[in-house]
Length: 89
Image 1 (cartoon, rainbow, N blue to C red):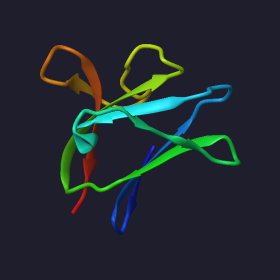
Image 2: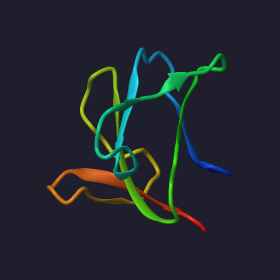
Image 3: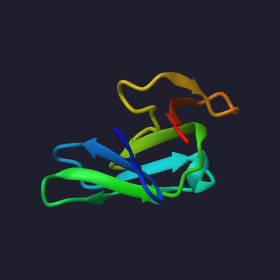
Image 4: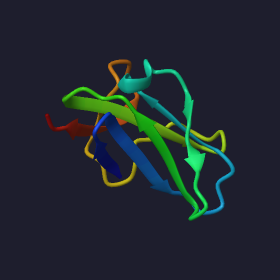
């Protein structure tokens, strides 16, 4: 899930039993960014984000990089599938 914040966005993911969740996105410069697990078990990461279409992939416990479930799927420009989402102005 993507939630708009005054300073950017918050990515949230329910991944019961996961020990680590990482994000790669155009918003992270395609560098791995670890999500933090909240007390409620929901993983979150806040990122600065400009309006427009953005791309991201998730990795759980060192597995494969995958588009988030339920997101439209596009390409990262190198042949890998990523999730697409829009940040409204």
